[in-house]
Image 1 (cartoon, one colour):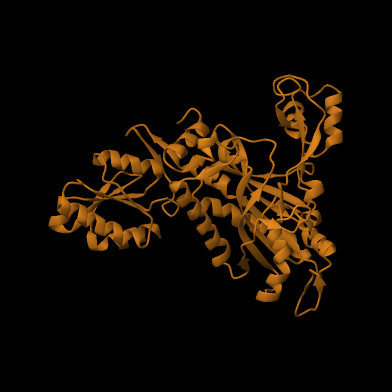
Image 2 (cartoon, one colour; image 1 turned 45 degrees about the horizontal axis):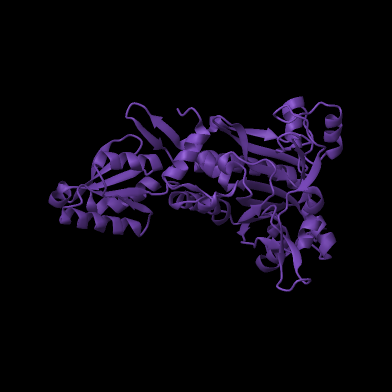
Length: 455
């Protein structure tokens, strides 16, 4: 396997069109990345699969799509303006900045809240903390992670707003409208795939920690007495999703509970699903939180709007508790690439063993030669037929072996070659990515073949 897996995946992503550095021609923007043609396909497949499993296949979950800008009072009510901060320190020699809580954990083996200035500064004053370079550091200061912006056209009348620090706040402020328009009964969920923006102190590690990223949230509203039961139920649902739907090796996954010091200010309990990224160790890809009734209580208090739920049978009114499943799509994307990457030393090739349903291209169509008009015409007919239903690659460059290996490297499950036998017998060669086995399939049945394989 690769010596440095992160560098290998980063290089593959750029070289083959999965991920590009944002604004690269201007020197790039740190911790911001754009998805290229293949990355956009894989990302969309991840989005579509999540939506299918979390919304379409559940009668008790409703999907919404909220904007990236919310009323500033939302963030005041949620506690993010005061509580969404991390302690930062600066190396007095190099002037590099570091997340203070990470230094405490790495150097002292102690867990502290990321915004616990008093405790962190005590360690600094006692001389127990240095920068990673061994230099003295400044006192810690809290840096709010919300990204501020202004809206309005007239100076003096502009409103200070914030880009979403967490995507789920759209769900809480739309909760009452979903109740009034869809009339769900508790328990029910609201789901959203949205963007979040953060002024992160600790950056780097490619897609793993960015200033702008995708979040997929299910906020499940339950009776307070049933919160623990549904919390365990959703933990099982989400664990199985990564194994059964994304095809991730279960041995590379684990649960990690947050200590009280690590837990977010809104959470009664918190567990992470972590993936063991080769060379990086276990990292969070999804968090599951028991948020109690914190969010709805806060928004009811600050808005003055009653957000209680009344049971239509018993007439009991209560503020629902919330079970949250919040995953980062960029991290899932990265985990899928890490897990699928395979170096076949016997055949001297690189293979992305993606689940076929996730692969950017479901098939590739090759004319054996590009100077034989009948072969090219038939290949284009097959390409057009398949591309009505699937994303399909076309490649007529170079020898057929190199074309196979090129598709292996981007995860295409099946390569379909149109050759002289196609013209004579009406069949094509279909080559399997993982086994490299080749079979003949009737041109008339090629659509059904791909469909059956994707089931």
